[in-house]
Length: 272
Image 1 (cartoon, rainbow, N blue to C red):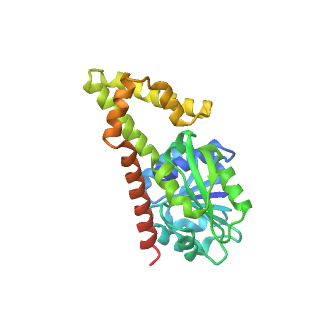
Image 2 (cartoon, one colour):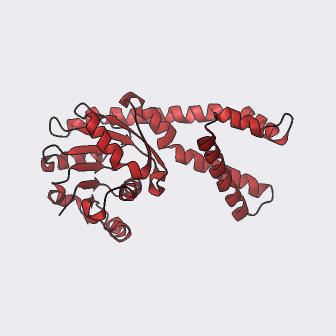
Image 3 (cartoon, rainbow, N blue to C red):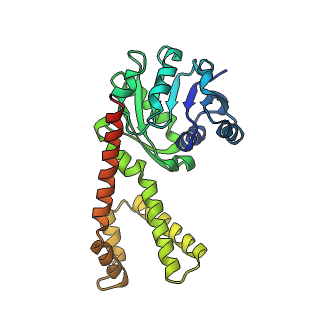
């Protein structure tokens, strides 16, 4: 098997990472996926043309230079302990496991194993993701560059100190869910005001796409762009006044703080 990359976990996030890696410079014959669900394994084989093995066949992916771990936090220690005896010398471990610090990850791996922690998001599936990476104690700038190249097909990749990674989780990692909730609210509002749901959905999605494009292409601060839409005493001003009254900013800050708190709880639970 000519595996260069082994992906451990082919669920929603693992599948998004896989799609992004294949959109970059990697080919299906360079990648093997370790997946426990036979149904999911069949889907990955058919959709992406990659080799898929079960968790009892880790020896089949032992030669991989890069191991991407994309499992639930409570499964990660067991996966790492099972993987540890099969790692080849110099193998790089990339973790997309939410909440688990590099210290915790390194504890279950052979001494000196380079670990790079990544917080991606699901738009990686369509090449529009946002990911942040952080190096562990034994990972070098070269390792970080390797991970950035690996994930280039997923979208934006930035490097941050690990102390900032929980904030990244709260912002971009979980951010798509917030945006989907906002779009859902806009669609429901449009329906309540008399629009057919398909029309409201198309308008809401295009509005989101257009606003994002303006932010990216103009480089203007969001406040400036918001003010350009908001005429004094106009309809937008009336709407924004209600959003302020209901505490939009406070709601997002509270939600993101809860996200960070939960990340810290997950980390603490796995440090014992």
